[in-house]
Length: 319
Image (tube, rainbow, N blue to C red):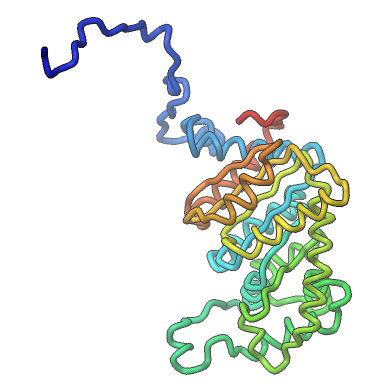
């Protein structure tokens, strides 16, 4: 008996009768010039490019049908200059609610009022100066303490209205205040540099962030057929979102058939589990798209605007 299997009786089939995942219709069209629309349409209709185009189409659909488009993000988005991108989408009425962590407020306030942000942490840590900017802490902590009963986000919006910054053109928060869209801020005490200052009041911050949690839950209760996008928050916002969604559903709100998206440089457990997968398990769809914010967010913006301009709508959740 041979020690090799006999292949002579193998059954073969025509490739024309067999399913394939890829055909040439999904391949890119190579161009050397043209409009952004030409470039957008030339992207391969496969894997991450297909997901990105679907996400942009879903956001355009939500905008065209007046559904919720909720963006969650952390401070790195602001530090890379991408707050300008989100601000533009807010001013155009496409993003209609924003939830952030404390670092977003810090970096945007510094940029809006002082045109500079982001320390050398290692150097400051050695000297004991890290996070000790007096003006930053006093402005934010003071605003929240004065208006904590209205929520953290509303406190910051009031600060920007009553004391307009010199560099409002580069500020996400200026756009939020101008358009008066919901802004919720979700704080873990001890995570932000302004918590280490003598002007910090934990009771005020706790009350303000509690108000914002309940506001976020109300926004999420209206998320059906809308879109939620998380950008660069690996822990706090995914955890807060999951609990707020639970609250909304527990109170009888039908929160279903929405699109959930996570953009990040590295895909982490919590965003993918708590935003992309678990909330869309029974209805809707989730997408995880990997890339640096400073590359992906300009592309996302242009893709959204292209789909809005074209009047494209996506009525289903089948990819």
